[in-house]
Length: 340
Figure 1 (cartoon, rainbow, N blue to C red):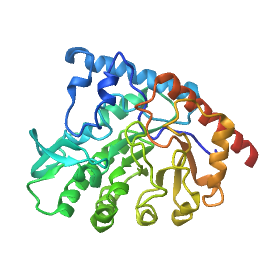
Figure 2 (figure 1 turned 135 degrees about the horizontal axis):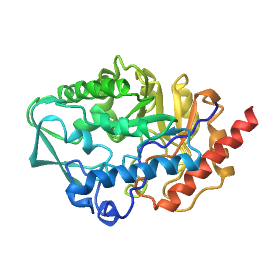
Figure 3 (figure 1 turned 30 degrees about the horizontal axis):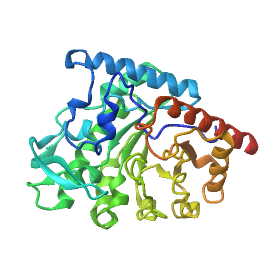
Figure 4 (figure 1 turned 180 degrees about the horizontal axis):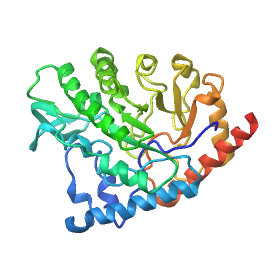
């Protein structure tokens, strides 16, 4: 089918599950942030399961073709995996600067990075048990995790990134074995820090993807619209992705009105095309979505497009998120009919 639809990864978590005002009042946590949850620890897993069922059903009812778990169990896109790895001091934090120039607490690397257990496999199995559609699950990429930590062990940023890459590679293998159709790595910091991304980040990303048993994707973005207001005119790290081992590349085009001719640089890859402007708190019309899809067609083969939001829907009100998903599915159907 042309133009299948999917979330990038996250969906909005219910207000009864997480304190959304606290969530919006800080940058995505790199360490644990248990204070965000409204549900007591002994009932939290059950509540997260229920909220995940809602996220799955909302995606299905909106008409999406590839379903995620909405990242409902996560305080941020990255910290569920990043804080589960060995070799980190999670009690005595370090500090790094965000892409917005603000300091945030992060783990300190004090030993070799190791994956001591599967982290998201049970999440994947839950998702597989609750939908018969294709499924995708997301992980933070090795370069981004290496930028969200203070290295006090390797003494070389490339080695630290490679340490994360091995942990991610092991997690990918278990996710495909558990039934994933697509595994996506989120690498927003490749856009934020293009020089080290080119120097060693792409090599670490490829090391994580090497030998993957199924379809792999990489998401590169400008940051959540709710937190990062200003957008550059174009990507600082995208043409380099033609050398990435991934099958799909997830990019934003809506909020930034991206010049889609840059997609010619990665022709041959499937493009997860961001067509929802998440700075707009209203649902676009299906016709507006169709127009954004058409903008990419001169530079991407039609059978190489997956239609998606610009970034995750985590910070949107639920009614807005649902309406945008519906419009996205309907807009994809318009262009699909035109080409069929």
